[in-house]
Structures are given as C-alpha cells and as structure tokens.
Image (cartoon, rainbow, N blue to C red):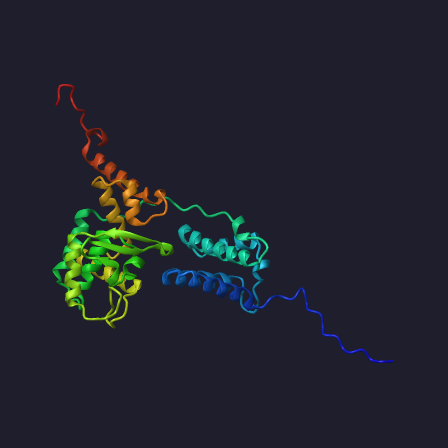
Length: 326
C-alpha cells in the first residue's frame, strides 16, 4: 500500500495571537498619521498612549488579544484601570479618543468587523474655570522679561516667545512650529498651523513686532525655524515650557504658570475689553464656539468677585442704602 505524504498540521484556530498583532496594527496606524502630516506633538502623544494600551493587554508572560478580539467589556476594564491609577478624567478622555481613532482606522482597513470602542461611554470631564493671571500680572511678567535682569543667553528670543504667547494666544506647539517665512512683517500677520494642521492667519501687535525685529538682528542662523535652542536647532515645546517656567518662577514667584496660562490670559483679557466671542474663536483657532465660551465663565467669575467686594447688598452685614441716599 502506497504511503500517503504527511500533511502539514492544521493551524490552531484557538491559539493566542502573538504580541505583533496589536503592536503591528498600532504601527500601521501611526504610519497613516505620518502620511497624513500629523504634527510631531500628536504622533508622540498617540504613540505613548497606544504603547500603554498595548502593555495593559500584554501582562508579563502573556500575549495580547488581536484587535478583533478586544470587546467593549475589556475596554471598560482598561478604562477602570486608568481610574485606579489616579488619572484625571481629561487624560482618560484623551486616551479613549486615541484608542477610538485606532479602532476606526482598523475598521476602515478591514482588520476588525466592528468598532468596540464606540460602545464605551466617554467619561465626563469637570467644568473647570482656567486659572488666569490678571492683565497687570501678565504685563509685569512680560516687562520683566524685557528688562533682561536674569543674565540669560538668549534674551531677545525669550522676549519674543512671551510676546507671541500673550500677544497672539498661540498654543506652545504652534509657537515652536513657526518658521521665518510664516511672518508677513509689513501687514503684521502670522501663518499659524494649529491642531490637525489647520492653518489660520493671526495678527500681532507693535510690541511683538519690535521684539521680532530685535531678535532677528541678534539671530545668526540659516535655520528656517523661528525659535532656536542653544545648539542652533528648532526649540522644542519642552524647551519653550522650560523658558516660561523659569521666568515665571524667578520674576513672579509663580512656578505654576505655564504657556497655556498666557493663552488663557490672551482670550480672557480680549473678552473683558469687549472683543466679540466669535472673533476670539477665530483668533484662537477653536473648531467649536463652545470651547471658547469657557472664557465667558472666567469673566463672570471675575465679575462676581468684583460684585462681592464692592456692592453693599453682596456683603454680609452690609449697610442698607437709605431711601434718601444718592
């Protein structure tokens, strides 16, 4: 009897997928973001969040499930682990949005049949009123930078950095992404690349223009980036945050002040001086008006503080105004 050739063993349908299944899917997604010209800031944050996501599903000595095997219950358990680690709701919302975007990509390319992340409820974020320095506090800080009393190696650069953060309300990623060619120095407009690579035109004032002229006169480099570090390369967002923190701590004694504080101040002070909310929305590059409306909450808080301090009816035990009084 003729012996039949040995058959290859059938694939084990119940075998666990290897680590590369999930991590390769993540790599493909990040590559798609690069091809879509996502910012370096976005790529860095998404890569970190998705790396932690993959680590959760791959405890030591085990392999994670394939993306198609991750269901909404497992995703809720993952969210629960984020709460247990003490992350605030805003960070958790960001991480969930990142995972949803990954699953949306995998659904589009056919790797998964349904998007389980869509079934997970987004955690509610607390309505926080941002802490905003007053116009006086902000101007004292910026004028302190201009006074150049700290013996810094690049005082002209540092002054321009503050003038653009407060004078234009730029995000830190937008600031460090500026190039020399983004400035129209005659009309005083800046081409700003915001979130999602969306571009907008932002005006800048006389003080920022003077700071820019002074900085360019001291700057000696062919590098296209506007802001340079001590090595002559583009200043990173981390480097810019360090500059702001240093001056805030040494000049105002407030180490909690950060670049976004100056963006908050820009919007709040514009609103307090009568600027239209929709105009502020355009200047800030907000996609939704509701995002800009939080600054009205700040102004109302300030108004209530003034009322509580100043109006007789607001003070406990305050004297009533007589009927004959003026």
